[in-house]
Length: 55
Image 1 (cartoon, rainbow, N blue to C red):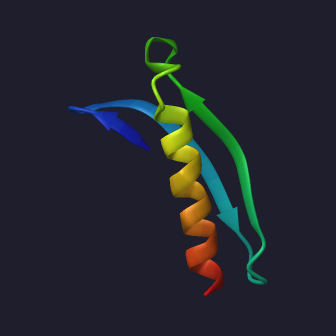
Image 2: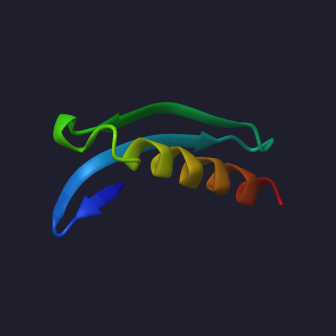
């Protein structure tokens, strides 16, 4: 989840199964925060979490 102060501005849904297969099912960012790197940051964090589960 991406936050600004106490407000959620973006979210990514990430799932990793028992075999270490990861899935990023959705990423959403409020319209006023798009094109500012929020979605990219969420994707990067989601990928890090998937690979952390594999090790």
